[in-house]
Length: 390
Image (cartoon, rainbow, N blue to C red):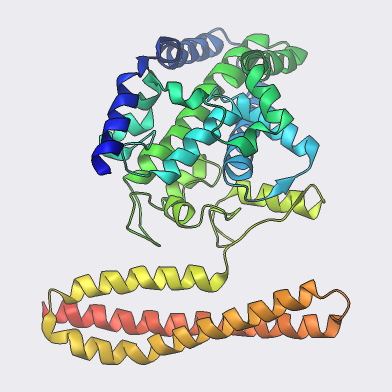
């Protein structure tokens, strides 16, 4: 079966053709952006309003990709109203990263086959392959409309895919050029808010496929190459917490802590407050904490392999807290089932009952976090023991 799969993959790759239009665009656009920026500054046309427009366009386009292409369409992490979906898809198209349909198919394949031969931007083929070189080949299998039928049935997705080039040109170049012309800087609108912004946005996106699969922490799993990289999150609109995303792809958040830089999360939450988004999906707190603890246990076991004489002592130290963690998890699961059951029982539920269950849930989560903190303290003691033993 494995031989048949590999044969299928080799057959697919043998049909891949060099994508010359994409190569020329990705090579020439940075040159054009640099030349345009130099002339814009050297000619004395520099204008702060154009800089502000560039930042606004960068965020509009970047969030179109992260909130629209990625979290809304690729992962169905939330639902949005028609106007919001239109704006996200149209501005996402201004990234010149393909139509939403094509982009989402590639991304779903990346999750489905991560680090394997069928991963479109497989990091095992090299940093630069994952970053940009994978785009230099055409993949004819992407054109199969039976892939992603949930996407293709959306009239907006079909419309954007059919008219992608004119829409992308309009929102990438004509729109900023027209806005900047209001203060007499159409050139800056074209080359700074348009082309330079485009090049930067593209490489910000590409960094997720390269940087976040090489540098950072594997906080929740080491079964794949994805890593959490807070620095990358700063210029990718919150997408840098990539290890978390690969473990919990349906969560509308990437940065789960309130202080994690994740503008995409804040946008989605803000839209929900205004009634423009709903059904925001998020992973339960206990699932996240226990997944993190599982990885810490794994790292601890690797440390103890270097000091086998400490294994029994470490087990005695950690086992009691480990049992408390499991008990807290079970209690939370039972409470969540009760809570969701009560919410569904519209006729028999009372607000007092709902409030009581919410209070119990909050207390149970707090207890889990406190127990997790105690386990962390004990794990630190084990680390110190191993260090002293060495």
